[in-house]
Length: 265
Image 1 (cartoon, rainbow, N blue to C red):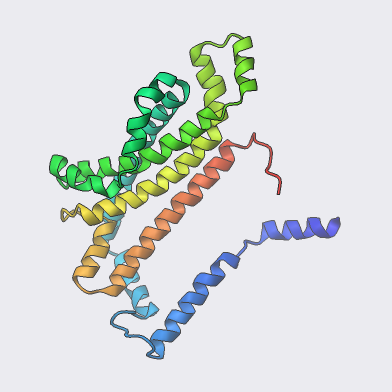
Image 2: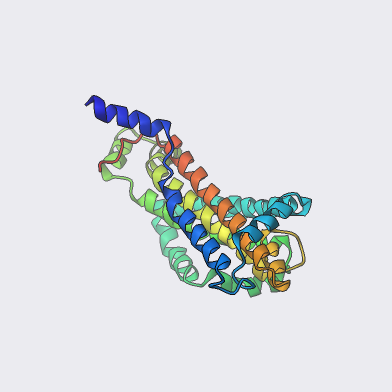
C-alpha cells in the first residue's frame, strides 16, 4: 500500500511529459528531413526558420494587436451565442409547445453548414467586425442549445416528483432543480461552444477579409508573400490559443462540478 501511495505522490510532484513525446518526435523528423535535403525547403521550411520568424513576430506590436482583436471577436460572439443557446435549450427542454413550434425549424437550420451563412452575412452586414461576431455567435449557438437541451431533458422523474411534492414554483423548479441537474451537460456545451467559436473566429477572418488585423490575417499575409514560415507560425499560435481554451474550460468544469462523485473506471 505504501508503494502505491509513494508513486502517487511522485506522480503529483512531477508533471507528466509523455504527451510531448509525439510532437517532439515529429519536430526532430522535420529538422532531419530539411537538413538532409529530403524535402523542398522552399515548401517545408526548417524549424529554425520558423523559430526566427516567431522571434521577430513576438517583438512586433502588430502581432499582439491581432491576438487581442481575434480574442475580442471570439469572446464577444461566444458570449452572445452561448447565452442565446442556453436560453433556447432551456425553453425547448421545459416547454412542449416550444418544441412543437420552434424545434422543427431549429433542427432544420442546424443542418445548414455554418460557412454557408457567410455570403448572406457579408451581403447584409458587410465584412467588418459585426458580421464576424455574428458568425462566431452562430458557431457557439448550436452546440450550446443541444447540450442544454440534453441536460434539461435528462432531469430524472424522481427529482421532478420531489419538486412537485414540495410545491416548487416555476422559478424554483428552474433554478433549484433543472439548471443544477443540467449543469454537467451545460458546462460540456460551453467547452464545445468555446472551441467552435474559436474555429469560427479564424474562419471568419479568412473568408470575410477586410484588411483588418487579426490572427487569421497572419496566415493570409504569409500565403500572399509565399512565406511558409509565417503561415506555420500563425497556425501554431492559433492552435496554442485553442488548446488553452480547452484546458481552461476543462479546469472550470472540474472546479464547478466538485460535488459530483468521481467516475468509476
